[in-house]
Image (cartoon, rainbow, N blue to C red; front, side, top):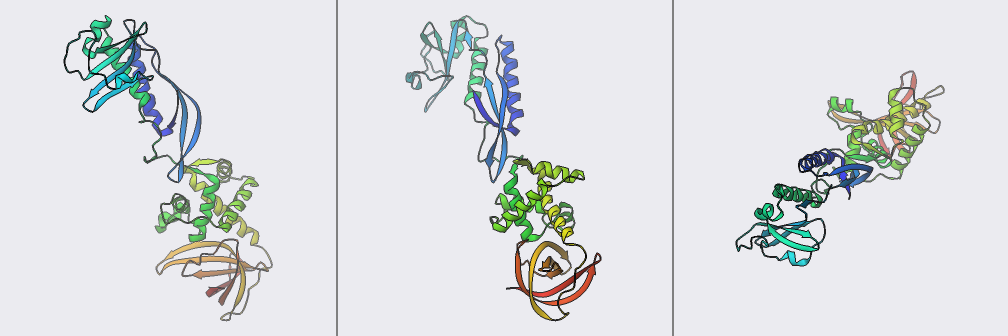
Length: 367
């Protein structure tokens, strides 16, 4: 029989089967065995879990003194609980707790249905040994019941209401949510998050994606940015371990949650690459200090700075001539990285940063 078992449930299932196999060996039977035939991804709570497709064989038919054990019947006040490998005659659903061996009229909690030469017999559990002449009759019947419970159990299968601890994420979709997270808060590494008590981009994107916070879907620009990052990584010739790992993981369809830092880090690597491309000779200052004017600017990056006066959002832009403009905004302007805007602002300063001319603007208003 084939089952889909969440990967984290596999150790308990294997332990259960090994225990039954050991018991079967003591009873002179071939016990159950399991083999993995493949793996699949099961969507769960906004992410995915890995499930193993397994083939389980339940060993030998249980034969007691020449009689095949067909079913165990538990006689409950509300009716009979029938446990069997195959469908039985409907008469057993309402059968009285009789024993066709001793024929004594007394209350029984459990009886068994046995088959030999196409004849079915109902026997009480305490009469099994006498009826079959087998010293281990009760032990064999109990083993049969445990196997049947395992067959019918959903203990190890997928449960949509369960919280699984090993989520997998669809790479392409997650990259889009990472772009969304960067649009909202800029890129925040896990190290920076620890120092500033902010949320790392890797975790922020996961929360957006799995609806752990107010949900928002990636917009067209986020999707475009994610594709740009993917194209950048696809063409990348790795020069260090980080780049190698990023390239490897972005080649996968799904990655484990523990690797999301690399996926989000691809966004940061792409931003640094864009900034490096924009650096060079020929950068000039723009406008006159203290003069207010309209700028046509393309958003290059966003970085959040947590200072004593609260959060500051550092936007970096280029104009149509490739000149660098920076804006320290007191609020998130929700600008799409890579998009072009008309911004009315006052030139605050002309200064050099890393030997490169920058125009600093303030009091900006997106038109």
